[in-house]
Every structure is written in structure tokens, then in C-alpha cells.
Length: 266
Image 1 (cartoon, rainbow, N blue to C red):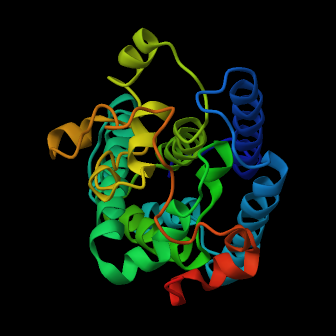
Image 2 (tube, helix red, strand yellow; image 1 turned 180 degrees about the vertical axis):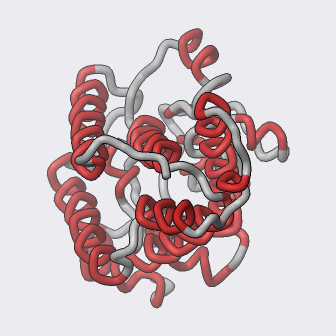
């Protein structure tokens, strides 16, 4: 069984906190769009929802992807546990497979009406910044967690691969949701390798056609492969409307309204 240094939870939490603070500072210093709503007003709701989700997931799904990988390795479950690949091949391969699964899951969240009702709370944010990347409904988080556990058991990635994937996914979500300005040439180079804020912002447009594009979280290749890629929003990044056509009232930022949003239409 592959071994990791102790404290992998601290590694994940430490990397998350570091990336969050870094992009919060960078987007404040180099904003892409003018902020229309007070940062602290929105952040209290979005960070509060993220904190609620951490507690909820600990209770509802105490089994982590790392634990699932350990179980799969002990019981020789999963495709990669039955191969003798070098870590230099196995880790990138496992990360790519898991990232493709996230892409397909994300597309399903938009195309299956019941799943969309829970995912839309993420899209109801009327601003787009680093805290949007941690704003998810707990039911959506629970389903994502269950899917991840099933994938880890089926694929059989090493502990190292799961840790790399978890850290990368969290960092990518914070980066590609940040309100960070990147020079066009820098963005063009980066989006050939990773999903950039400008690329993912298209997906948060109020325009339903644009919202059905750019599902990728970490890597941009799946959108190009499955023809869901859109380069730029029709209205431009500075003037495009973010969020949903409904759920735009100030009261929708309250935690209780966010939690009950899947069961309401206004």
C-alpha cells in the first residue's frame, strides 16, 4: 500500500487556506470586474455556507476519498490497483480520470432538472470572486462526495494521486472563480493548460446558452473535446450579467434562503 507523510488533512487545509488568501489578495489588487455588492456582505454568506458544509459533510459522509483509496488498496479493488504502473504515470493518469469525471458530473448537474435545483445555488451568486468557488448547496456536496468515493473505489488510485487531485481541485476552484485580471496573452497561454477565471466566468453568465458551456474545473481540454467550449461571453467580461435571472434579491444571500433555494422558484 502506498504511504503518504502523516498530516495529509493539514496539507489539504493548509494549501486551501494559502490559495484562498492569495487569490483574495490578488483579486482585490487586480480586479477583473467592478464589484457592485459589498465584499463583506457576500463573503459572510458564502464563507458561512462553506463552514456549514464542512460540518455537514463530517457528519453525513465521514468517509473521505483518502480512506476509500486506502480501503481499495487493501482489498485490491480498482483498475489501477491491479496494474504495476510507475507513480510518474499512475498519478497523472488517475488525476486526469478523476478530473474527467468531475467534468461529466458538472455537465449532468446542469442537464438533469433535479440535480440542477441543488446546483443552481452556486450559480445564483450575483458576483464572481474567490468565495463563489466555495459556495455550494450541502445536498450537492453530499452527492459529489458519494460519486467521488465510488470513483476512487472503481479506479483504485494511490493515496498520493488522491491527495494531488484533492489539492488541485480545491486550488483550481478558487483560482478559476477569482475576480482576477489576467493580461489577454497570459490568459491565452494559461487556458491551454488550466481553466482560467475568464474561461470559467463565461459559465456563470445569466445567459443560459453561455451557462451551458465551459464545465471544466481544473483542465480545459474536456470542453474542447466534447465541444462545450466557449472562448468569450457575447457581452464582454466587464458588462456581462452574472448569476440567474431570478434569485437576485438581497434577501437571497441569507443562509436560510440559500439552504431552501432548491425547494423554491423565487
